[in-house]
Amino acid sequence: MDIINILPDSVANQIAAGEVVDRPAGAVKELLENAMDAGATQIDLVLKDAGRTLIQVTDNGCGMSDSDARLCFERHATSKIQRADDLFAIHTMGFRGEALASIAAIAQVELRTRQTGADIGTQVVIEGAQIVSQEPAACPTGTTMTVKNLFFNVPARRSFLKKDTVELSHIEETFRRITLIHHDIGFSLTHNGKKLYDLTAGSMLQRICGLFGQPMKERLYAVEEETDIVKIRGFASRPEYSRKTRGEQYLFVNGRFIKHPALSSAVEKAYTDLLPEHCYPSYFIGLQVDPSRIDVNIHPSKTEVKFVDDHALFAILRSAVKRAIGQFSLATELSFDTPEEFNIGPAPAGYVPPEPKISYNTGYNPFRATGSQTHMRMESPEWPKREERTEQPWLTVEADETEETTPTPTTPAVQTSACMQLQGRYIATPLSSGLALIDQQRAHERILYDKFMGSQQAAIGSQTLLFPVQCRFSAADAELFNELIPDLKGYGFVIDAMGGCTFVVSATPAGVNESAIQELFDQMLTDHKGASMQKHVSRSQCLCASLARQMAIKPGQQLTQEEMQQLVAELFACPLAEMSPSGKRTITIVKPEELLH
Ligand code: ADP
Ligand code: MG
Image (cartoon, rainbow, N blue to C red; front, side, top):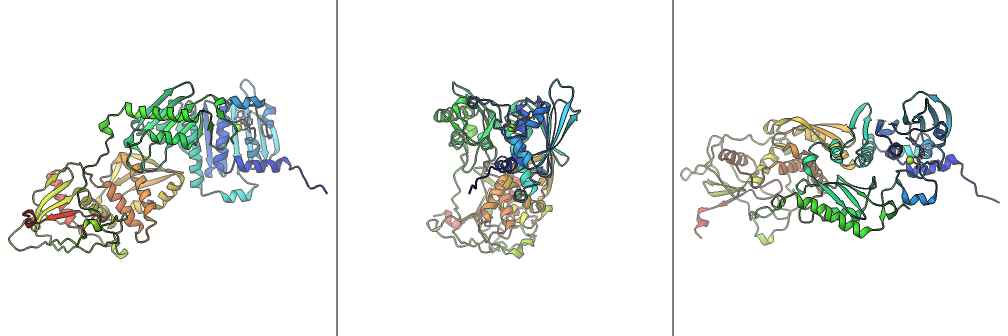
Protein backbone atom coordinates (compact mmCIF):
# COMPACT_ATOMS: atom_id res chain seq x y z
CA MET A 1 0.00 0.00 0.00
CA ASP A 2 1.40 3.41 -0.92
CA ILE A 3 1.30 5.80 1.95
CA ILE A 4 3.29 8.79 0.70
CA ASN A 5 1.35 11.92 -0.26
CA ILE A 6 2.71 15.07 -1.76
CA LEU A 7 1.62 17.91 0.49
CA PRO A 8 -0.59 20.44 -1.26
CA ASP A 9 1.17 23.81 -1.70
CA SER A 10 -1.18 25.48 0.74
CA VAL A 11 -0.11 23.10 3.50
CA ALA A 12 3.58 23.29 2.56
CA ASN A 13 3.35 27.08 2.63
CA GLN A 14 1.71 27.06 6.03
CA ILE A 15 4.53 24.93 7.36
CA ALA A 16 7.15 27.19 5.79
CA ALA A 17 5.28 30.17 7.20
CA GLY A 18 5.88 28.85 10.69
CA GLU A 19 9.60 29.30 10.09
CA VAL A 20 9.64 32.61 8.29
CA VAL A 21 6.72 34.34 9.96
CA ASP A 22 6.46 33.06 13.49
CA ARG A 23 5.06 36.36 14.76
CA PRO A 24 4.03 39.74 13.34
CA ALA A 25 7.61 41.01 13.59
CA GLY A 26 8.65 38.25 11.16
CA ALA A 27 6.20 39.48 8.52
CA VAL A 28 7.29 43.07 9.09
CA LYS A 29 10.91 42.12 8.51
CA GLU A 30 10.13 40.36 5.22
CA LEU A 31 7.96 43.19 3.89
CA LEU A 32 10.49 45.89 4.80
CA GLU A 33 13.27 43.89 3.18
CA ASN A 34 11.28 43.42 0.00
CA ALA A 35 10.65 47.16 -0.15
CA MET A 36 14.37 47.85 0.22
CA ASP A 37 15.23 45.27 -2.42
CA ALA A 38 12.82 47.12 -4.73
CA GLY A 39 15.05 50.19 -4.40
CA ALA A 40 12.64 52.28 -2.33
CA THR A 41 13.83 55.54 -0.81
CA GLN A 42 10.80 55.93 1.45
CA ILE A 43 9.10 53.08 3.30
CA ASP A 44 6.11 53.51 5.57
CA LEU A 45 4.96 50.89 8.02
CA VAL A 46 1.45 51.05 9.45
CA LEU A 47 0.28 48.67 12.18
CA LYS A 48 -2.89 47.93 14.04
CA ASP A 49 -2.93 45.95 17.26
CA ALA A 50 0.77 45.23 17.13
CA GLY A 51 0.44 43.77 13.65
CA ARG A 52 -2.21 41.24 14.57
CA THR A 53 -4.98 43.03 12.68
CA LEU A 54 -2.95 44.96 10.14
CA ILE A 55 0.57 45.24 8.80
CA GLN A 56 0.88 47.57 5.84
CA VAL A 57 4.10 48.47 4.09
CA THR A 58 4.13 51.12 1.40
CA ASP A 59 7.22 51.77 -0.69
CA ASN A 60 8.17 53.93 -3.65
CA GLY A 61 10.32 51.23 -5.21
CA CYS A 62 10.26 49.68 -8.68
CA GLY A 63 6.82 48.07 -8.38
CA MET A 64 5.68 44.90 -10.13
CA SER A 65 4.10 44.02 -13.46
CA ASP A 66 0.59 42.52 -13.59
CA SER A 67 1.85 38.96 -13.83
CA ASP A 68 4.65 39.41 -11.29
CA ALA A 69 2.02 40.70 -8.91
CA ARG A 70 0.41 37.25 -9.03
CA LEU A 71 3.60 35.25 -9.34
CA CYS A 72 5.28 36.80 -6.33
CA PHE A 73 2.99 34.76 -4.07
CA GLU A 74 4.16 31.46 -5.53
CA ARG A 75 6.74 29.47 -3.61
CA HIS A 76 10.28 29.91 -4.87
CA ALA A 77 9.18 32.94 -6.83
CA THR A 78 12.08 35.33 -6.73
CA SER A 79 13.59 37.89 -9.05
CA LYS A 80 16.79 37.97 -7.07
CA ILE A 81 18.72 34.88 -8.03
CA GLN A 82 18.62 32.77 -11.14
CA ARG A 83 21.47 30.35 -10.73
CA ALA A 84 22.99 28.54 -7.78
CA ASP A 85 26.20 30.53 -8.35
CA ASP A 86 24.33 33.72 -7.56
CA LEU A 87 24.10 32.51 -4.01
CA PHE A 88 27.72 33.48 -3.50
CA ALA A 89 27.24 37.06 -4.48
CA ILE A 90 24.01 38.05 -2.78
CA HIS A 91 23.50 41.77 -2.51
CA THR A 92 19.79 41.72 -1.74
CA MET A 93 18.03 41.01 1.52
CA GLY A 94 15.80 38.25 0.19
CA PHE A 95 16.55 35.53 -2.31
CA ARG A 96 14.64 32.41 -1.30
CA GLY A 97 11.34 33.51 -2.74
CA GLU A 98 9.24 32.13 0.05
CA ALA A 99 8.33 35.09 2.23
CA LEU A 100 5.29 36.27 0.31
CA ALA A 101 4.09 32.71 -0.30
CA SER A 102 4.31 32.10 3.42
CA ILE A 103 2.55 35.29 4.41
CA ALA A 104 -0.21 34.75 1.86
CA ALA A 105 -0.78 31.26 3.28
CA ILE A 106 -1.62 32.58 6.73
CA ALA A 107 -3.24 35.96 6.19
CA GLN A 108 -5.54 38.02 4.01
CA VAL A 109 -3.25 39.95 1.70
CA GLU A 110 -3.91 42.82 -0.63
CA LEU A 111 -1.21 43.99 -3.02
CA ARG A 112 -1.39 47.25 -4.94
CA THR A 113 1.54 47.97 -7.17
CA ARG A 114 2.57 50.01 -10.17
CA GLN A 115 5.80 49.60 -12.08
CA THR A 116 7.92 52.60 -12.92
CA GLY A 117 6.78 53.83 -16.31
CA ALA A 118 3.47 51.92 -16.30
CA ASP A 119 0.25 53.89 -16.85
CA ILE A 120 -1.76 52.00 -14.34
CA GLY A 121 -1.21 49.66 -11.48
CA THR A 122 -2.76 46.41 -10.39
CA GLN A 123 -4.46 45.11 -7.30
CA VAL A 124 -4.32 41.48 -6.18
CA VAL A 125 -6.36 40.09 -3.31
CA ILE A 126 -5.24 36.75 -1.93
CA GLU A 127 -6.53 34.87 1.06
CA GLY A 128 -5.07 31.69 2.55
CA ALA A 129 -2.90 31.29 -0.59
CA GLN A 130 -5.96 31.52 -2.95
CA ILE A 131 -6.11 34.43 -5.37
CA VAL A 132 -9.50 36.05 -4.83
CA SER A 133 -9.27 38.79 -7.42
CA GLN A 134 -6.97 40.84 -9.61
CA GLU A 135 -7.96 44.08 -11.24
CA PRO A 136 -6.38 47.28 -12.53
CA ALA A 137 -5.91 49.95 -9.90
CA ALA A 138 -4.90 53.58 -9.91
CA CYS A 139 -1.99 53.84 -7.52
CA PRO A 140 1.35 55.61 -7.26
CA THR A 141 4.55 53.98 -8.45
CA GLY A 142 5.75 51.43 -5.97
CA THR A 143 4.05 48.85 -3.86
CA THR A 144 1.65 48.68 -0.94
CA MET A 145 1.40 45.30 0.69
CA THR A 146 -1.46 45.03 3.17
CA VAL A 147 -1.50 42.01 5.47
CA LYS A 148 -4.68 41.58 7.49
CA ASN A 149 -5.56 39.18 10.26
CA LEU A 150 -2.30 37.33 10.50
CA PHE A 151 -2.76 33.63 11.38
CA PHE A 152 -6.52 33.91 10.75
CA ASN A 153 -6.47 30.28 9.58
CA VAL A 154 -3.86 29.02 12.07
CA PRO A 155 -5.53 29.39 15.48
CA ALA A 156 -2.71 27.54 17.22
CA ARG A 157 -0.20 30.16 16.09
CA ARG A 158 -2.53 32.97 16.94
CA SER A 159 -2.91 31.78 20.48
CA PHE A 160 0.88 31.74 20.86
CA LEU A 161 1.09 35.47 20.30
CA LYS A 162 2.00 37.50 23.35
CA LYS A 163 0.40 40.68 24.63
CA ASP A 164 0.34 43.59 22.19
CA THR A 165 3.08 45.38 24.11
CA VAL A 166 5.36 42.40 23.65
CA GLU A 167 4.57 41.89 19.98
CA LEU A 168 5.00 45.59 19.31
CA SER A 169 8.34 45.64 21.04
CA HIS A 170 9.49 42.78 18.81
CA ILE A 171 8.38 44.78 15.81
CA GLU A 172 10.17 47.87 17.08
CA GLU A 173 13.35 45.87 17.52
CA THR A 174 12.99 44.53 13.97
CA PHE A 175 12.41 48.08 12.77
CA ARG A 176 15.56 49.30 14.56
CA ARG A 177 17.66 46.47 13.18
CA ILE A 178 16.65 47.38 9.66
CA THR A 179 16.47 51.16 9.83
CA LEU A 180 19.73 51.68 11.73
CA ILE A 181 21.88 50.37 8.93
CA HIS A 182 19.68 51.61 6.07
CA HIS A 183 19.84 55.21 7.19
CA ASP A 184 19.87 56.42 3.60
CA ILE A 185 16.22 55.37 3.31
CA GLY A 186 13.36 57.26 4.97
CA PHE A 187 11.15 55.16 7.24
CA SER A 188 8.09 55.73 9.35
CA LEU A 189 6.23 53.57 11.83
CA THR A 190 2.63 54.25 12.79
CA HIS A 191 0.83 52.14 15.36
CA ASN A 192 -2.90 52.41 16.02
CA GLY A 193 -2.91 55.84 14.41
CA LYS A 194 0.05 57.14 16.40
CA LYS A 195 3.29 57.89 14.58
CA LEU A 196 6.02 56.34 16.70
CA TYR A 197 8.93 57.06 14.37
CA ASP A 198 9.42 59.34 11.42
CA LEU A 199 12.96 58.88 10.22
CA THR A 200 14.25 60.95 7.34
CA ALA A 201 17.11 59.71 5.22
CA GLY A 202 20.43 60.88 6.63
CA SER A 203 23.64 59.84 8.30
CA MET A 204 23.93 56.87 10.61
CA LEU A 205 24.37 59.18 13.57
CA GLN A 206 21.17 61.02 12.68
CA ARG A 207 19.41 57.68 12.43
CA ILE A 208 20.70 56.55 15.83
CA CYS A 209 19.43 59.80 17.34
CA GLY A 210 16.10 59.42 15.53
CA LEU A 211 15.66 56.03 17.12
CA PHE A 212 17.26 56.47 20.52
CA GLY A 213 17.00 60.18 21.19
CA GLN A 214 19.15 63.25 20.60
CA PRO A 215 21.40 62.82 23.66
CA MET A 216 23.00 59.85 21.90
CA LYS A 217 24.90 62.34 19.80
CA GLU A 218 27.17 63.29 22.66
CA ARG A 219 27.57 59.75 23.89
CA LEU A 220 29.18 58.07 20.92
CA TYR A 221 32.52 57.89 19.20
CA ALA A 222 32.83 57.13 15.51
CA VAL A 223 34.41 53.80 14.67
CA GLU A 224 36.00 53.65 11.23
CA GLU A 225 38.41 51.28 9.57
CA GLU A 226 39.16 50.07 6.09
CA THR A 227 41.28 47.05 5.23
CA ASP A 228 41.40 44.56 2.38
CA ILE A 229 38.94 42.23 4.00
CA VAL A 230 36.56 44.59 5.76
CA LYS A 231 35.25 48.10 5.83
CA ILE A 232 33.95 49.20 9.22
CA ARG A 233 31.66 52.16 9.85
CA GLY A 234 29.73 52.85 12.98
CA PHE A 235 29.56 54.23 16.47
CA ALA A 236 30.40 52.99 19.93
CA SER A 237 29.49 54.54 23.25
CA ARG A 238 31.92 56.57 25.28
CA PRO A 239 32.90 54.44 28.26
CA GLU A 240 31.15 56.73 30.74
CA TYR A 241 27.86 56.16 28.93
CA SER A 242 27.94 52.42 29.24
CA ARG A 243 24.71 50.79 30.34
CA LYS A 244 23.76 48.31 32.98
CA THR A 245 22.03 46.15 30.44
CA ARG A 246 23.24 44.84 27.12
CA GLY A 247 20.55 46.76 25.29
CA GLU A 248 21.81 48.77 22.40
CA GLN A 249 24.30 46.50 20.74
CA TYR A 250 23.94 46.29 17.01
CA LEU A 251 26.28 44.63 14.55
CA PHE A 252 25.56 44.53 10.84
CA VAL A 253 27.18 42.76 7.96
CA ASN A 254 26.49 43.91 4.44
CA GLY A 255 23.36 45.75 5.55
CA ARG A 256 21.99 42.89 7.58
CA PHE A 257 21.71 42.73 11.37
CA ILE A 258 23.68 39.82 12.76
CA LYS A 259 24.30 38.14 16.06
CA HIS A 260 27.87 37.04 16.36
CA PRO A 261 29.12 36.39 19.88
CA ALA A 262 32.80 36.45 18.88
CA LEU A 263 32.53 39.80 17.10
CA SER A 264 30.46 41.25 19.95
CA SER A 265 33.08 40.20 22.40
CA ALA A 266 35.71 41.82 20.17
CA VAL A 267 33.88 45.11 20.69
CA GLU A 268 33.52 44.58 24.42
CA LYS A 269 37.18 43.59 24.73
CA ALA A 270 38.12 47.00 23.40
CA TYR A 271 36.60 48.41 26.60
CA THR A 272 38.60 46.19 28.93
CA ASP A 273 39.39 48.09 32.12
CA LEU A 274 37.40 51.09 31.02
CA LEU A 275 33.98 50.11 32.25
CA PRO A 276 32.66 49.67 35.76
CA GLU A 277 31.64 46.14 36.59
CA HIS A 278 28.43 44.87 34.96
CA CYS A 279 28.35 47.75 32.50
CA TYR A 280 28.18 47.25 28.80
CA PRO A 281 28.93 49.53 25.90
CA SER A 282 26.33 50.45 23.32
CA TYR A 283 27.40 50.13 19.74
CA PHE A 284 26.06 50.38 16.22
CA ILE A 285 28.64 49.00 13.84
CA GLY A 286 28.34 48.03 10.21
CA LEU A 287 30.83 45.76 8.46
CA GLN A 288 31.14 45.45 4.69
CA VAL A 289 32.80 42.29 3.51
CA ASP A 290 32.98 40.53 0.17
CA PRO A 291 29.76 38.44 0.04
CA SER A 292 31.78 35.46 -1.12
CA ARG A 293 33.66 35.53 2.19
CA ILE A 294 30.45 34.84 4.11
CA ASP A 295 28.80 31.48 4.47
CA VAL A 296 25.40 31.95 2.88
CA ASN A 297 24.24 28.52 3.79
CA ILE A 298 22.26 29.93 6.62
CA HIS A 299 18.63 30.62 7.14
CA PRO A 300 17.86 34.17 6.03
CA SER A 301 15.44 34.86 8.84
CA LYS A 302 18.04 33.88 11.39
CA THR A 303 20.77 36.24 12.31
CA GLU A 304 23.78 33.95 12.51
CA VAL A 305 26.59 34.38 10.04
CA LYS A 306 29.84 32.57 9.41
CA PHE A 307 32.90 34.37 8.11
CA VAL A 308 35.84 32.89 6.32
CA ASP A 309 38.15 35.41 8.01
CA ASP A 310 36.82 35.11 11.52
CA HIS A 311 40.04 35.75 13.40
CA ALA A 312 41.26 38.61 11.33
CA LEU A 313 37.86 40.31 11.56
CA PHE A 314 37.87 39.94 15.30
CA ALA A 315 41.28 41.60 15.62
CA ILE A 316 40.47 44.41 13.20
CA LEU A 317 37.16 45.21 14.86
CA ARG A 318 38.64 45.26 18.33
CA SER A 319 41.47 47.54 17.36
CA ALA A 320 39.12 49.85 15.46
CA VAL A 321 36.90 50.30 18.51
CA LYS A 322 39.90 50.61 20.79
CA ARG A 323 41.32 53.32 18.65
CA ALA A 324 38.01 55.13 18.56
CA ILE A 325 37.69 55.25 22.31
CA GLY A 326 41.38 55.87 22.89
CA GLN A 327 41.87 58.46 20.23
CA PHE A 328 39.23 60.86 21.30
CA SER A 329 39.22 60.57 25.04
CA LEU A 330 41.69 61.70 27.61
CA ALA A 331 42.93 59.13 30.05
CA THR A 332 41.68 61.25 32.92
CA GLU A 333 38.16 61.18 31.58
CA LEU A 334 38.21 57.44 31.73
CA SER A 335 39.11 57.13 35.36
CA PHE A 336 36.48 55.34 37.37
CA ASP A 337 38.69 55.12 40.43
CA THR A 338 36.82 55.84 43.57
CA PRO A 339 38.66 57.23 46.54
CA GLU A 340 39.71 54.91 49.31
CA GLU A 341 36.82 53.28 51.11
CA PHE A 342 35.93 54.68 54.44
CA ASN A 343 36.78 51.84 56.75
CA ILE A 344 33.33 51.12 58.10
CA GLY A 345 32.64 47.90 56.30
CA PRO A 346 29.38 46.15 55.63
CA ALA A 347 27.15 44.89 58.37
CA PRO A 348 27.43 41.17 59.05
CA ALA A 349 25.11 38.74 57.30
CA GLY A 350 21.74 38.46 58.90
CA TYR A 351 22.39 41.45 61.04
CA VAL A 352 19.21 43.26 61.85
CA PRO A 353 20.06 46.74 62.96
CA PRO A 354 18.54 47.60 66.27
CA GLU A 355 16.51 50.74 66.59
CA PRO A 356 19.21 53.27 67.48
CA LYS A 357 18.60 54.74 70.83
CA ILE A 358 18.08 58.28 69.77
CA SER A 359 15.75 60.61 71.47
CA TYR A 360 15.49 64.20 70.57
CA ASN A 361 13.19 67.05 70.98
CA THR A 362 12.86 69.33 68.07
CA GLY A 363 13.21 72.46 70.06
CA TYR A 364 16.60 71.49 71.31
CA ASN A 365 19.85 71.87 69.44
CA PRO A 366 21.51 68.51 69.83
CA PHE A 367 24.71 69.52 68.18
CA ARG A 368 25.86 72.07 70.64
CA ALA A 369 27.41 70.42 73.66
CA THR A 370 25.92 72.24 76.58
CA GLY A 371 27.21 71.18 79.91
CA SER A 372 26.82 67.67 81.09
CA GLN A 373 23.19 67.22 80.24
CA THR A 374 22.90 65.13 77.10
CA HIS A 375 19.57 65.40 75.40
CA MET A 376 20.67 63.41 72.48
CA ARG A 377 22.53 60.25 72.99
CA MET A 378 23.59 58.01 70.19
CA GLU A 379 24.67 54.56 71.03
CA SER A 380 26.33 52.59 68.32
CA PRO A 381 25.02 49.08 68.09
CA GLU A 382 27.47 46.36 68.99
CA TRP A 383 29.61 45.96 65.94
CA PRO A 384 31.49 42.74 65.37
CA LYS A 385 35.16 42.88 64.59
CA ARG A 386 35.98 43.35 60.95
CA GLU A 387 37.24 39.79 60.48
CA GLU A 388 33.92 38.40 61.60
CA ARG A 389 31.97 40.34 59.07
CA THR A 390 30.80 38.70 55.96
CA GLU A 391 29.46 40.40 52.91
CA GLN A 392 25.88 41.37 53.43
CA PRO A 393 23.58 40.88 50.50
CA TRP A 394 22.10 44.04 49.12
CA LEU A 395 19.40 45.34 51.34
CA THR A 396 18.58 42.96 54.12
CA VAL A 397 17.17 45.51 56.48
CA GLU A 398 13.91 44.02 57.48
CA ALA A 399 11.20 46.54 57.96
CA ASP A 400 7.80 45.77 59.29
CA GLU A 401 5.37 46.07 56.35
CA THR A 402 2.94 47.99 58.49
CA GLU A 403 5.55 50.61 59.10
CA GLU A 404 5.79 51.40 55.43
CA THR A 405 3.02 53.89 55.51
CA THR A 406 4.09 55.54 58.71
CA PRO A 407 5.68 58.76 57.63
CA THR A 408 9.07 59.49 59.05
CA PRO A 409 9.16 62.51 61.29
CA THR A 410 9.56 65.71 59.41
CA THR A 411 12.91 67.32 59.65
CA PRO A 412 13.37 69.25 62.85
CA ALA A 413 14.63 72.73 62.27
CA VAL A 414 17.88 72.17 64.03
CA GLN A 415 20.86 74.38 63.88
CA THR A 416 23.85 72.13 63.59
CA SER A 417 27.36 73.01 64.56
CA ALA A 418 29.82 73.89 61.89
CA CYS A 419 30.56 71.03 59.55
CA MET A 420 33.69 70.23 57.67
CA GLN A 421 33.96 68.15 54.53
CA LEU A 422 36.81 65.66 54.37
CA GLN A 423 38.12 64.19 51.11
CA GLY A 424 34.95 65.40 49.39
CA ARG A 425 33.25 62.46 51.00
CA TYR A 426 32.82 62.69 54.76
CA ILE A 427 31.28 65.30 56.97
CA ALA A 428 32.90 65.92 60.34
CA THR A 429 30.81 67.63 62.97
CA PRO A 430 31.07 67.80 66.74
CA LEU A 431 28.44 66.09 68.87
CA SER A 432 28.21 66.06 72.61
CA SER A 433 29.57 62.55 72.64
CA GLY A 434 32.48 63.12 70.33
CA LEU A 435 33.34 63.91 66.75
CA ALA A 436 30.87 62.48 64.26
CA LEU A 437 32.21 61.36 60.92
CA ILE A 438 29.37 60.99 58.48
CA ASP A 439 29.57 59.34 55.08
CA GLN A 440 27.71 61.88 52.94
CA GLN A 441 26.49 59.39 50.35
CA ARG A 442 25.22 56.81 52.82
CA ALA A 443 23.61 59.51 54.93
CA HIS A 444 21.81 60.95 51.94
CA GLU A 445 20.76 57.46 50.90
CA ARG A 446 19.13 56.97 54.28
CA ILE A 447 17.34 60.31 54.11
CA LEU A 448 16.02 59.72 50.61
CA TYR A 449 15.05 56.13 51.38
CA ASP A 450 12.98 57.20 54.36
CA LYS A 451 11.28 59.89 52.33
CA PHE A 452 10.46 57.49 49.52
CA MET A 453 9.28 54.79 51.89
CA GLY A 454 7.01 57.26 53.58
CA SER A 455 5.83 58.24 50.11
CA GLN A 456 6.36 61.77 51.24
CA GLN A 457 6.08 63.20 47.81
CA ALA A 458 5.84 66.65 49.25
CA ALA A 459 9.09 66.11 51.12
CA ILE A 460 10.91 65.00 48.00
CA GLY A 461 9.16 67.23 45.52
CA SER A 462 8.52 66.47 41.89
CA GLN A 463 10.20 68.31 39.05
CA THR A 464 8.51 68.70 35.71
CA LEU A 465 10.97 68.27 32.87
CA LEU A 466 11.22 71.02 30.32
CA PHE A 467 11.67 68.39 27.63
CA PRO A 468 10.15 65.00 28.37
CA VAL A 469 12.71 62.22 28.17
CA GLN A 470 12.18 59.00 26.21
CA CYS A 471 13.28 55.73 27.77
CA ARG A 472 13.51 52.38 26.06
CA PHE A 473 13.91 48.88 27.35
CA SER A 474 14.19 45.37 26.06
CA ALA A 475 10.85 43.61 25.63
CA ALA A 476 11.15 41.77 28.93
CA ASP A 477 12.30 44.85 30.84
CA ALA A 478 9.53 46.94 29.30
CA GLU A 479 6.95 44.58 30.69
CA LEU A 480 8.55 44.70 34.11
CA PHE A 481 8.83 48.45 33.97
CA ASN A 482 5.15 48.73 33.11
CA GLU A 483 4.33 46.94 36.33
CA LEU A 484 6.45 49.34 38.35
CA ILE A 485 4.93 52.51 36.94
CA PRO A 486 2.20 52.80 39.61
CA ASP A 487 4.85 52.61 42.34
CA LEU A 488 7.04 55.14 40.56
CA LYS A 489 4.14 57.56 40.30
CA GLY A 490 3.94 57.52 44.07
CA TYR A 491 7.53 58.76 44.21
CA GLY A 492 6.96 61.72 41.94
CA PHE A 493 7.57 60.31 38.48
CA VAL A 494 5.15 61.01 35.65
CA ILE A 495 5.54 58.29 33.04
CA ASP A 496 3.50 57.49 29.96
CA ALA A 497 3.76 54.23 28.07
CA MET A 498 4.05 54.96 24.35
CA GLY A 499 3.47 51.39 23.33
CA GLY A 500 6.10 48.76 22.83
CA CYS A 501 9.30 49.38 24.71
CA THR A 502 9.08 53.16 24.74
CA PHE A 503 8.12 55.32 27.67
CA VAL A 504 8.05 59.05 28.09
CA VAL A 505 9.03 60.59 31.40
CA SER A 506 7.73 64.09 31.96
CA ALA A 507 8.43 64.53 35.68
CA THR A 508 10.78 63.02 38.22
CA PRO A 509 11.41 63.38 41.93
CA ALA A 510 13.45 66.52 42.56
CA GLY A 511 17.15 65.88 42.35
CA VAL A 512 17.10 63.30 39.58
CA ASN A 513 19.65 64.03 36.92
CA GLU A 514 17.65 64.48 33.73
CA SER A 515 20.30 63.11 31.44
CA ALA A 516 20.65 59.91 33.43
CA ILE A 517 17.02 58.83 33.67
CA GLN A 518 17.52 55.83 31.42
CA GLU A 519 20.46 54.67 33.52
CA LEU A 520 18.45 55.24 36.68
CA PHE A 521 15.69 52.96 35.45
CA ASP A 522 18.11 50.39 34.05
CA GLN A 523 19.77 50.10 37.43
CA MET A 524 16.43 50.05 39.18
CA LEU A 525 15.28 47.14 37.02
CA THR A 526 18.52 45.28 37.67
CA ASP A 527 18.10 45.83 41.41
CA HIS A 528 14.47 44.84 41.23
CA LYS A 529 15.28 41.59 39.46
CA GLY A 530 18.02 40.85 41.98
CA ALA A 531 15.87 41.67 44.98
CA SER A 532 12.91 39.63 43.85
CA MET A 533 15.03 36.59 44.74
CA GLN A 534 15.15 37.73 48.35
CA LYS A 535 11.92 36.89 50.05
CA HIS A 536 12.14 39.36 52.87
CA VAL A 537 12.63 42.42 50.69
CA SER A 538 9.40 44.04 49.65
CA ARG A 539 9.05 45.59 46.23
CA SER A 540 8.78 49.09 47.62
CA GLN A 541 11.83 48.60 49.83
CA CYS A 542 13.81 47.58 46.81
CA LEU A 543 12.59 50.41 44.60
CA CYS A 544 13.13 53.01 47.28
CA ALA A 545 16.60 51.70 48.08
CA SER A 546 17.56 51.66 44.43
CA LEU A 547 16.30 55.19 43.82
CA ALA A 548 17.89 56.46 47.02
CA ARG A 549 21.23 54.88 46.20
CA GLN A 550 21.30 56.35 42.74
CA MET A 551 20.05 59.80 43.66
CA ALA A 552 22.27 60.20 46.70
CA ILE A 553 25.07 62.72 46.47
CA LYS A 554 28.22 60.99 45.45
CA PRO A 555 31.73 61.08 46.86
CA GLY A 556 33.60 63.98 45.38
CA GLN A 557 30.63 66.31 45.44
CA GLN A 558 31.57 69.44 47.30
CA LEU A 559 28.92 70.58 49.75
CA THR A 560 28.35 74.02 51.16
CA GLN A 561 28.18 74.62 54.88
CA GLU A 562 24.41 74.93 54.63
CA GLU A 563 24.02 71.74 52.64
CA MET A 564 26.12 69.83 55.14
CA GLN A 565 24.15 71.15 58.09
CA GLN A 566 20.88 70.32 56.42
CA LEU A 567 22.09 66.82 55.61
CA VAL A 568 23.19 66.21 59.18
CA ALA A 569 19.92 67.52 60.57
CA GLU A 570 17.83 65.44 58.21
CA LEU A 571 19.91 62.36 58.93
CA PHE A 572 19.38 62.63 62.66
CA ALA A 573 15.66 62.95 62.08
CA CYS A 574 15.59 59.47 60.56
CA PRO A 575 14.66 56.68 62.95
CA LEU A 576 17.46 54.49 61.62
CA ALA A 577 19.99 57.24 61.13
CA GLU A 578 22.96 55.02 61.85
CA MET A 579 22.49 52.72 58.94
CA SER A 580 22.18 53.23 55.22
CA PRO A 581 19.32 51.30 53.57
CA SER A 582 21.87 48.80 52.28
CA GLY A 583 22.99 48.11 55.81
CA LYS A 584 26.15 50.16 55.88
CA ARG A 585 27.05 52.43 58.71
CA THR A 586 26.50 56.11 58.08
CA ILE A 587 28.15 57.55 61.18
CA THR A 588 31.22 56.83 63.21
CA ILE A 589 31.74 58.72 66.42
CA VAL A 590 35.23 59.28 67.61
CA LYS A 591 35.15 59.82 71.37
CA PRO A 592 37.57 62.30 72.87
CA GLU A 593 39.11 59.64 75.08
CA GLU A 594 39.85 57.49 72.02
CA LEU A 595 41.89 60.29 70.56
CA LEU A 596 44.22 60.21 73.49
CA HIS A 597 45.38 56.64 72.89
P1 ADP B 1 12.46 37.07 -2.13
O1 ADP B 1 12.47 38.42 -1.50
O2 ADP B 1 13.26 36.07 -1.38
O3 ADP B 1 12.77 37.09 -3.58
P2 ADP B 1 9.65 37.19 -1.58
O4 ADP B 1 8.62 36.14 -1.42
O5 ADP B 1 9.89 38.06 -0.41
O6 ADP B 1 10.98 36.49 -2.03
O7 ADP B 1 9.26 38.08 -2.81
C1 ADP B 1 9.05 37.46 -4.05
C2 ADP B 1 9.32 38.44 -5.20
O8 ADP B 1 8.32 39.42 -5.23
C3 ADP B 1 10.61 39.22 -5.06
O9 ADP B 1 11.73 38.51 -5.57
C4 ADP B 1 10.30 40.48 -5.88
O10 ADP B 1 10.55 40.25 -7.23
C5 ADP B 1 8.81 40.64 -5.70
N1 ADP B 1 8.49 41.66 -4.68
C6 ADP B 1 8.13 41.43 -3.41
N2 ADP B 1 7.89 42.59 -2.74
C7 ADP B 1 8.14 43.59 -3.62
C8 ADP B 1 8.07 45.02 -3.55
N3 ADP B 1 7.75 45.65 -2.42
N4 ADP B 1 8.37 45.72 -4.67
C9 ADP B 1 8.72 45.08 -5.81
N5 ADP B 1 8.79 43.74 -5.94
C10 ADP B 1 8.50 42.99 -4.87
MG1 MG C 1 11.72 38.84 0.33
